[in-house]
Image (cartoon, rainbow, N blue to C red):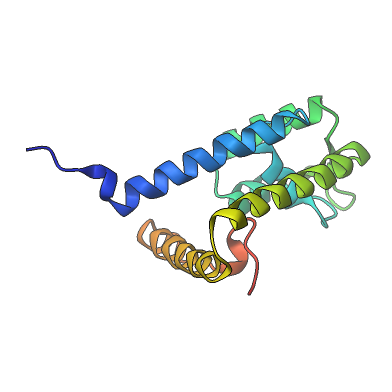
Length: 160
């Protein structure tokens, strides 16, 4: 007899994540951004630049992944690479003016997604879900050997 995996937390989490990502991809396509690129731009927001290694660690992706994403964002004119003034061997990635403008639109789209979710969940349920997902992320990170994950390390995470 086959187990009903549709009832597992993991399956529902994957389904919700895929649907969220697909909806966000629709919105991002309107501004010529691919899913994943927006979190890189968000990670660069408010910084004077970051190295590839810093971005890789912050976003918890492998260095080749961040390298490809930065190359694509640079080709779109959204980020620039420059050598650090005190050590020319270190390359910093920074937002361009066009990148800043896209970041503003990404923020609007993220708010739109939050509004769509708010229509589906009551405030108390949304707050409970955020708390549970935060706890799940921290626990899974710890189990995966990333015990240094804290609330501040979760991209897009906000304090309540």
